[in-house]
Image 1 (cartoon, one colour):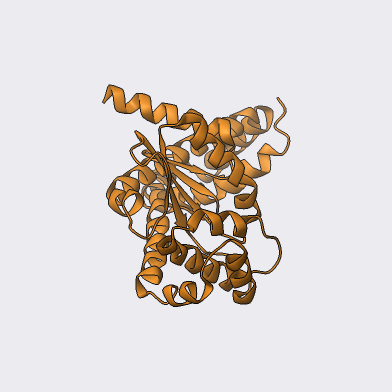
Image 2: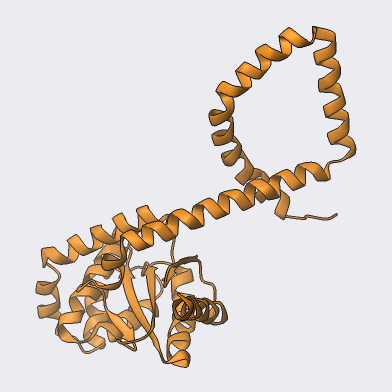
Length: 263
């Protein structure tokens, strides 16, 4: 049975899971050890340990099965926690005046994208996200600025959110996503000017304290859901991390649509 590069990833994940499990089990393990000492002498205990060792060496697939089981249990627990956090934060996720809405405003499924303007994966995902929304035709897309990579990310996020008041969010969003290299404030203003925005007004609107408060809320919500990187998508009730591509986005949209019909 070949596992290739999968094995190191499983071991890394197992280490975290095993640490938690060990902490939870420590009390009961101590009691078991005391019980074993009363039932078996030192030679017998050593012999049992040797039997277990030899069995695992002869049947290493057992450890792979343990890794898989632990990984599945941890993934299920993380999924359940994320779904609960999404439900708890539904209003902040789906109905925020500082988050731009693209696509069908009355769509039956909402995609929320957490992104950073300095994130290369986010830049590569732009076309797939828009294509998925436009191809489906009944999806509401909510953009959530989630600047985590640099101070430049935060300046770009505030500029994009301020552009909403000029009805120029998408123009600036796409221009920033198409830009490589530094995003200094001066460069952002030049990009905004090229995109047709009133730069003086944009600078003033960026000072709106509500913008920073909205960014702070986005960070708080992301922490509660378990979002650690960008891009990350909330599709209905599901967390979908990473630049997963148009097909996967549409697949989850259809899952959520079917779930809503049957609930």
